[in-house]
Length: 247
Image (cartoon, rainbow, N blue to C red; front, side, top):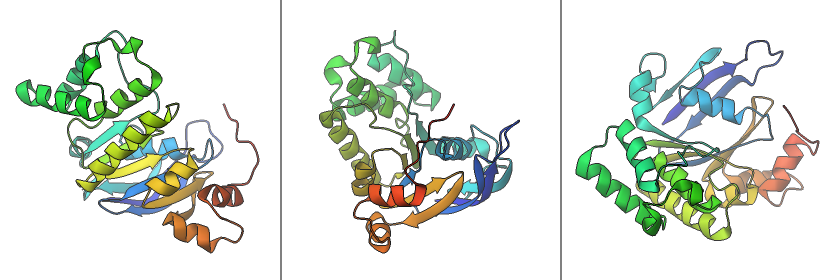
């Protein structure tokens, strides 16, 4: 589904590459975890794959479409759920989803029925006409998820989809994503919840300093690394325990 070849990004004025000569293949139907410390290059990589950032060099394709020649068609095939809430606080849940759904070309009864169905799945039907500024963090996170998938994308990019939510909201979100995946949606997922990633992802890649460190099925990667019992152990062995604060 996604083929990445020697992809690099160096920001203007930077001394180092944020992503450097990265090769990666992601198969159709995977739940693929993109993991790494703060500043490792995860968000930059996803931003390039979503055509929000222009690569410095290299190439990639999604569903056989090269980003250089098929940017608009490529964007129609993907959904993006950012870490920050992409919601208008003064609008209701229904109004927010109506706006985002119309951007994806949904109209009329199809749009209304889709919104109603999705709100019910994530437990927000009773709050459909409440302003989102009154929502709890978990409610906003669930609504934020819906905003990127009303058009049923082939590939869904998720940046920290469960950050800052309670166990109940996390369970609803992950179960919903598993159902989407079972229906054919390929999921690219970033998170600092490594235990969650270990159980949720079919395959993961760890990147650091913009380069691919390892990739594979979580359990196989863990068993192959001496001293690793969990994905968190593997992560710390490969990327170190030094703090990664950055501005």
